[in-house]
Length: 264
Length: 289
Image: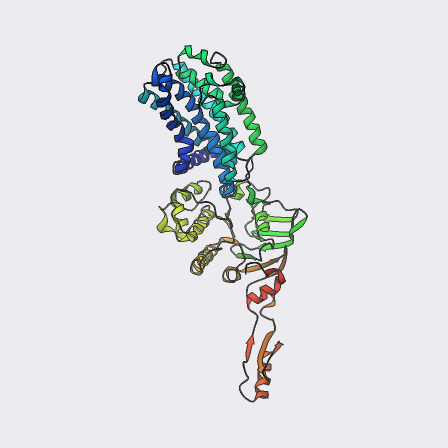
């Protein structure tokens, strides 16, 4: 009860602080939206159905990127910063349960994930004429992929925050693998155009499966043939994401530290 | 929950070494309820290590440690709710308004102060709606103190709270800490400012190289009250000085000998600073005063 109440209080505080950090909002929240505008305009002619067709590819793909940005990238850098600037130490000196701290992070990420998805899907539909799925089962798919993928990336973000010794180093430790994964997962270049070895690298991580699963929500059934395995493979999506949730939890338990470099 | 009459801090034989080098080497410490106790010493004397052990942030190698009747290394949330900590390093300020932050932190505690009361105590009432980042350095420090106080702690840790303050802010800060102690809050203060210990502390404990070099109230520290006085004057063009327990008699003898005015006569008793510098030996050289 206390954990839930304090977790909710933390989530509200964290969200308010998040939206007051302009640069952070641009890099972890607004970037997928800007890319959607750019890609749909630039590559619109290359897709069947023009910009609506391009949006049907890029909205789910960039939603996957956005979900990873608000979870993995956001927490990986923010927790490292909190460890360096005294925030974590101060919280440890107060009667705040550790579970409430993490519940607050999870609550903030979930709220950002839902906002991010709504922004991209809304822009695709209203701005580019993307068709919204009529079948409620597709929306159910969207819900579980969002939850499971965001959970996996949240756990990985918490784990990676401990990898760097300083907040400054964390920016690089988080940004580089995220950027490479975006390439390997078909975010910038459609999966059809990627060499098999790069697809295999991407297939080991959550982002590729989040993107593929979300494409199944917005693209017509016929588009499944363009995926790497020739189908949406939603069972594999669920398995890989669940496995990363389990692996991420273990990583968090093994690596998380409250103390920063200057705390000795 | 625990006893209410005993000392709030009871430490005996505290030891902590880093990589074989002792940082705290057999410290005894006792702090009474509602009193301000100052840990005074140069950088590296073991002040911060001692305090971090008392706060439960480090585990000692040896020694008996009780803070509010509990072992800090094992104490839980209920114990944390009874202490307040103001860290030596300021916490990066939040972009949110000061009052909202305090309201948030107050929610962690069972019986907190109203955010406006905490702001009143530290003299920040007129900045309640400001973003914490818009505060000046001294105001940020007072906000740190307000955060330390908002849970209505029985024991407040202040770790070098006024480093970087201008003299006027420092005096205002001292008055605030005194008013807290008058209200019944026990305070453990670490400082390397001698005048801060003298202005605030009911008891001063001087640490040197991990050990207690002296303890007592500021007036009697290191035998200050009974220390010998130095009488100095000039005779035959050369400075002369005598250390004596009876300076009045020495001056009378000199007056009789010179038959009137004694050239450049002065009588000097050791200041707290001189007592302190002699207590910490050569350690002060190169370190901050």
